[in-house]
Image (cartoon, rainbow, N blue to C red):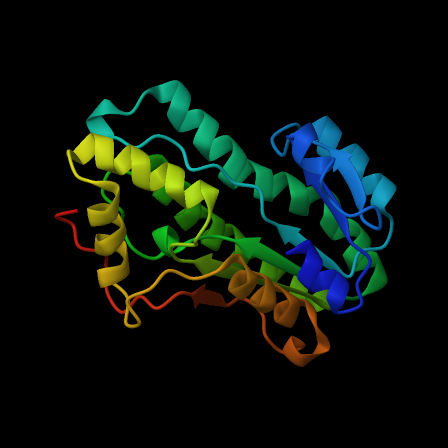
Length: 232
């Protein structure tokens, strides 16, 4: 996502809980080690950031893969903490600067799991549904100050994170990785996953003047036409 924003002319500031990942970002980016669920650290990073044109509340983890009755409470809380509370804290401490400037765009990352129920992904789905409720509330509160808020709902995105999900689901369901992959793809109109660049392009659009009248919207970057097959 950072590459797309930089290409569009933005100065990029990123945070991550993974120090090794931050070492790989371009030198032109302003990188900070930060746990999205640590309010004191989030507040410090936001204060140091100064004026913000676009805030992407993008932190997330996949959480456990299990039927709801088998989900461990500690794993539930960890998943909700990062996916929901992380978004809340980013906005809580980033929004004041935008309101003071009278402009800004907040881009939440939800998921198609925030639109449909997903078997065996209860903590993740619950958190992503809640992110949409948070976004719509922020859009209503911040709109009078010239600040917009929208949520992107990625579907299945090619990459290491989704590969982990596929592996865990295959183990939990006694299926092969390829069969689980095919099940995800079958629920889409184009029978395919999306690329990270597709998500980034939408984020840049929502942060641009071309979307100056787009707020409070839930935008799926996916090809889903229906709920994923509950048999998978």
